[in-house]
Length: 493
Image 1 (tube, rainbow, N blue to C red):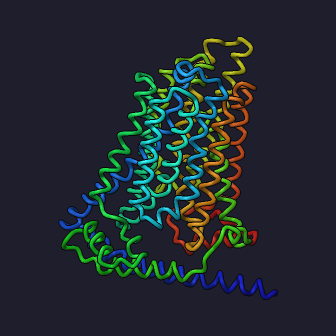
Image 2 (tube, rainbow, N blue to C red):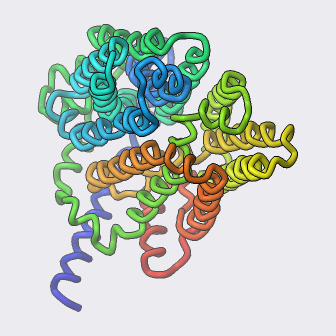
Image 3 (cartoon, one colour):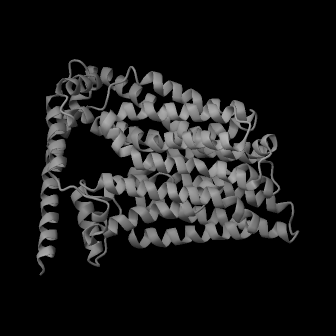
């Protein structure tokens, strides 16, 4: 064995030992923390947690509004401002360019100015962007506004779930963190529906109002106790934690746990982007980046950003189609969140990818029938059915589960770096798809959806072969299964 191999094994062993000690500590204090969070004081404290979460997910709603804005407004904006197809594609996709910039900066920004500070900055950029879009008379001001909104949601996509996870008690964390994804879907659905009755300039209000709620609400909610403890601001840390848990609650155990957790994180070796490509991180990196890439190139953002024009291309009412698509997303996403801890991640992902494959196949067949003037009354119904099947299937699994897996499959000391890389893959894939979608549709509408269907079929195989089940498993068990997979053993059981 080489010296470098011995060093690598030693580092891995040390990480495993530290992580095991940390989680043992977490388990030993979980019952006491849960009891401190219950009872009369717990009821009082949970109101602060609910209020703080509501304020934070106003940013998630704005995220959804930004994603949903371009679909119902495409024909009106192009008509009012005289934009070509390529100019509108730039407008639709430049949101993701701004988001990539925000994704690159979000981790450092949140650590430097705090979770609340990062959300404030994101809200200001988003408000300025929405105002620029609302008053635009030319393509360049439209694009600058969209770029600014993109930067805001790029930051919010990271900071909001981090903030919620850091303020909620352990026994409530899973339920509260799913609200982030629900509000993104809800924001997009509201933009889809209101976009059918409001002008595109008035529709910008759906992005401005939640940002104003976020800005004002941040003045009354506490900062993340974990961030305060990380900076050594002991008094502010205790005040924030007491506000979240109740005035009479015994926060001593949880305070000690948080401080020990931060010390443990600081003691782990720092991991750079280059370090992620070591063999020991290969499997989680392939699973994480692979799922996100397949999610994006399966057509979700192309269909979401330009849904109304897709319905028109298929010969169906854009208004009816858009409202129908928006109406099913929120309840199906909620069902997926409820099933995740009961059915498991892998079964939902397999069902979801199979459904998106079938949905895209139905849309592709409808375009083939339309091109050959066959069953002309059936083809629009097939297109609507296909897009609804795609939207429902995507919402129940592929929309949210890849992000849940991100927090579970990476070792604790690489989550930040790995999360930034996966986030960058997400926004790059989103940009590529939103920019190219209209051009693909001009090339071949049926071919575009056959390609999406093929990507979804590849996703089924990817999940079946490589993605581990993480439901009900400790971090040590998940890491052990990933290590076994790296050495050629099955990790699916």
